[in-house]
Length: 148
Image 1: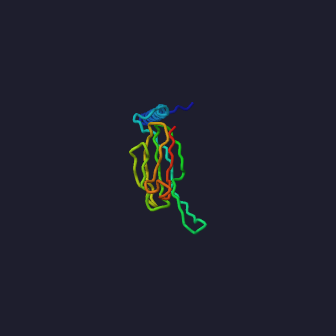
Image 2: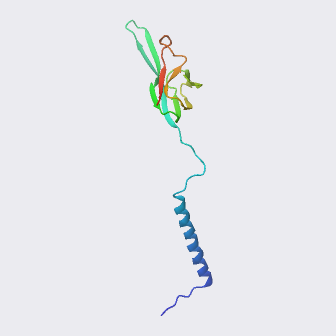
Image 3: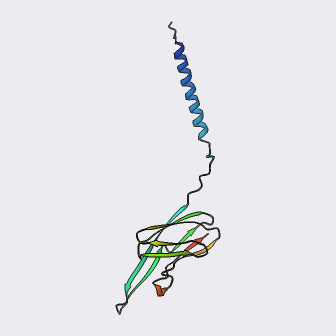
């Protein structure tokens, strides 16, 4: 019959190895049910829009054009953080405001304008280009933001 003889240093090494594995297993088990102590917040919903332009000629050769936001209508949830990313594609600059808010800005060709907003009241808000607000000014360049 053979007996296993271990040195004191080997027993200590085995003990600490088992202890470390046990602590690691306990930590892994506990953290799978843990929650962060700091609120990271919810990421905003991102909605992409672009500026667009329609051009044509009438029968008598007169050129007519109209600018627009695309999409023309978006729906967002009340009290939800929203990030509007508006890309300037057509037209040099489109100064805008959102009715019923204090949000103003300008979308420039080749650039993206980012607007962070949370709508606290239900309803329909108009995103209006101040340069193209009417038919006489190649508009109306108006998008509708429906808050539900």
